[in-house]
Length: 409
Image (cartoon, rainbow, N blue to C red; front, side):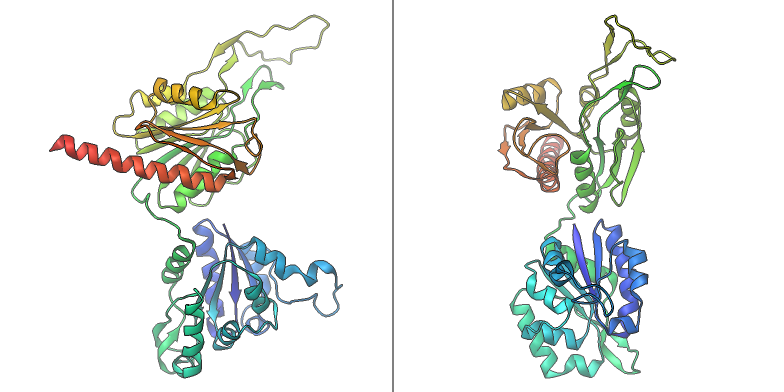
């Protein structure tokens, strides 16, 4: 998810640099927008280096720069792609502008152009905080749904004591999670996720694989970590970056993936097997490149291990989720797989459906649970699908706990 961090002109601006790192640790992509006054305290280069993103400082191209349409409407583009606008520190000046709808720089214009949730963390002199105008402006913003993080009390840079210090990082993070309605319902769980394809070598230059990009499994790993789980991601070859807070184990073949899963699943409470594991591997791998000839080439294959089934047969109290990529009779085939593999949940998708094929950012799935619940989802992003899968995991974990409690009674 993408957060736009507005940094305004106050002594606490330096703390925003630490906040960038904290947000990244929670898996957010952060783009910083600085007001002119903020640049008197911290340089844009600092935030660019920390965030890895362009730092926006002006509504239009800076003096001497080339003005163009892109710079003129950049606030609209940023507004459309941000999931949350966070202003920390928020000065009395920017609070007043937000409350009154003034748009005289990039940050205040972005505020009006965005429909994303807004969180502000005020920081200012105690008298400015207590002033009736500031409190009236804050009430106006709260009435519009803006989340206001109360400042801390203590010794201020101006030498006075009282409320006005920028709130601590954890308080700001909690407000961000609340505004985004992010859950932390997987704390205490250890989740093993498999993702991506496997590659089964024929010779030093050729191999058998499939079209899996790994995006669905990586989305599950990212969301599970954000929701509080310890996540081990066993990944076949992909070009994807490791999600923040996730332990990644790289493998190449199905046998390597099986070994990695066996090592880590014993410590897990949930296994989510999204990888597209090759069903077969060459019976023999030759050490030299197979030369081209005019004769037909026959390759003998042998079955790869069924990782999902081998894990599920000894799962005990652990919850197992499998995936079924189908091209016909999707629900019927997925329900058969649910029973045959002894899984608790199967995520089924028709890979021929629009928006559900390989290497896309969207998916169309049906969740089939062992307790008979079937949930067909419309086309949505793979991150949104991951959220719904994990919602079902949380529900099924609760069902298992209740059943275990009853059996012990």
